[in-house]
Image (cartoon, rainbow, N blue to C red; front, side, top):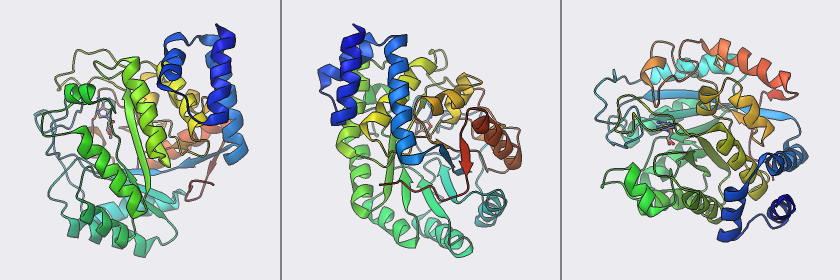
Length: 349
Ligand code: 5AD
Ligand code: FES
């Protein structure tokens, strides 16, 4: 069995893709020995391209209003326990100022799908950040928009866009989202973003309700097709105020295994060790890096709104100042032999 698994991992490394059956075999039969082998290959590949450098992105959670009602998400429209907030342009610029001082050269503006932030407002914010911090990259993560909107943000200076596809399996997508949201539209957004010229990030939750290994294979095949520059994956974690409150969380073990596979599929991919990974295990982010991740995204949101951006229960770092998170992450990375880098952290060729 182990020989067969190792052969498939070797094949994935050589061809950067496997067939549906091969991916499924790997997922169904993985064991500690093949997993360790996968992580060792993933680290070797990562070190060849990025050495022991870990890139950091400052996450600014600019609004927790959302017009959507995804069943898994703590800031969904129907989540009545959520105290809603919006950051002004000035508040966002203050976050950038703090972040810049701390060595951040990428700002990620993430929020719910909030109609208050019209295209004009987003363009204005992007312009202002670019003007003040021309040496920084701006990543937007603001959901599904028309192609024209994406183009306008790009023209204003946003170069990267994160839009997790959440699941690439149609049937599974229907079980996680209300009817208005469709996988085909989601995918269209990602292809639009890519065509416009963004560095694009897709991604999914591991262990979301009703997910099977077949669903995960669909995710891997979709990633093969899209060839994104970034892939964000983290475990599903239930939120008490959602229809999935009683569902079990995803496991760190499967999340790490998928991080390793994705590193082999796209050697130069930017792969974050996510906050969700750090939430289900105190050493989750370190383990993520050791499985192939090379990005961390400490929180730069103002301290008084942190608790309000609760996508899932028990989210870490909600009480920590940006400087504390920066120092904490720095220490954690050094501890495992990696260096936290002051740079835009672009995807290397
Ligand atoms: N558990 C883990 N991740 C979640 N997200 C939303 N809700 C949850 C949850 N309950 C993720 C989604 C989204 C990203 C911003 O956060 O994948 O794209
Ligand atoms: Fe925020 Fe450790 S990263 S406190």
